[in-house]
Image (tube, rainbow, N blue to C red; front, top):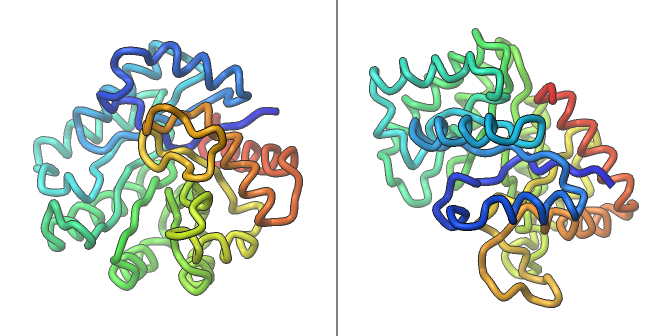
Length: 262
């Protein structure tokens, strides 16, 4: 079985001591490739560095997460634009809006998100998107730029309802499904919506080290999520859609290869 994890935060300090072992465990579980998420200038550079060290296995995104929108200065933006020219970078982002915690102000987030959207109209790269508690503002900005975007738009770590999913389908969105789907408490809306995702729009990811699947048995000793747990997410998605794991693996791998050109 061939799987691709479209969102792994391997630059996180929780992977500093044993990244090689983490990558090996993932390969043993059929996770052949991973996209390392860049969330600011430093982590984007680090993601590229890891991709250079593990060619054809790791790839990178480069952007400013809404939490770090306040750091998206003119100087930092110029440096980020140079990173998109690197062959290891397969997407612009992570970018978007997060009005839940507001580590950057809403206006800073809106300005940074629009910068990324404008860049994606000029760069032949897909967008790697984030949205939390900001549906209307997110939709308004994305819908304005969507006709001009050169690449796909991937909403990573989708946790929304069926209504939000259907609304986004109008914008030709791809959906990244994480271990949130494995939580029968917080993930109820998502679990009910997963079957509505067209298979050509479906992707899977761990968002490691976050979002450890709650229903893993035996329960891992560590709370750290790993790319090697992606097959468990694939199994959950398959169950919720009434499809085989092999089909989910084939569909999501094919979608990922098409979108990110890997």
